[in-house]
Amino acid sequence: MTSATIKLEQVTKTFDGRVVAVDDVTLDIRAGEFFSLLGPSGCGKTTSLRMIAGFELPDSGRVHVGGRDITDLPVHKRDMGMVFQSYALFPHRTVAENVAFGLRMRDVPKPDIVRRVKAALAQVALTGLEERKPGQLSGGQQQRVALARALVVEPPVLLCDEPLGALDRKLRQQMQFELKELQKRLGVTLVFVTHDQEEALAMSDRIAVMNKGRVEQVGAPTEIYERPRTRFVADFIGEINILEDEGRARALRPEKIRFVPEAEARVGGTVETANFLGGSTLYRIRTADQRTLLARETHAGERSPRGTGDPVGLAWTDSDTVALEG
Image 1 (cartoon, rainbow, N blue to C red):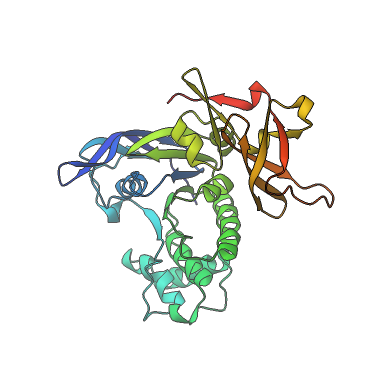
Image 2 (cartoon, rainbow, N blue to C red; image 1 turned 30 degrees about the vertical axis):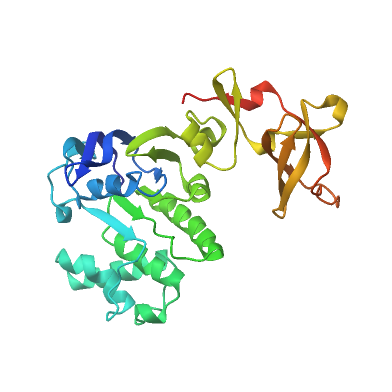
């Protein structure tokens, strides 16, 4: 399976002539990478994906795939696979028939359809379920059918719009690993829309964080998490402390804060709440100067978590903080 680059060039999309869904977005997505569009509802991520797919046309700007301008190309000529949150399977057709649908639409010879459907189902671990209907499958199995249907046409680009959103947490995590492994094995360029920060961090080669139709930051997961550029990115990705100092804002992750004896503390305070998370506890601390700080402590040995009202000393280094642009 080949892969392709994707380029959005100053793309803008409005609805009803006044609601700006995507605002002058430029993105360069590399061939063969797992690229996530991440942000809250209404930020423009799904509209951006739909413009790549051809379901929406930009008001201005251009869309290029594999170096070719496809802005005005209809959906069926874009040679892309797409997986939706709803899976969009035909309930009255078997697994094999669902997977074969795109090949039949392309007039692929029947012997080739049989061979390719068999191979696609093997890729997603569904061999032996060819004759079942979607209603006889679990949510995870239905998701795999939708994925096989998208991959069987051997597209250079796979577009996924919240494809794991309907799954329970444990199955969702399992499918994250499986989808990431499959994407790397096939080498397809995958664009993944999600509002789930942990999901984007776990799966992506790079992430574009979107807000109000614009791209706030693009980078690898470690860069987005460790070096957020704006207040929005810092606040949207995981827990964060925003420190205000003479009109300048700096971000400090809870795990960068250390619990130390009072004599070594940068600030003292008391525990307001303690959320036990298994391998760690997330504390909300009320400081002596009436600020609220979040601090995460990893558990070592069998020491019990600190309790509400316990006095604590906190310390961090300036290098643990990140200056924010806005």
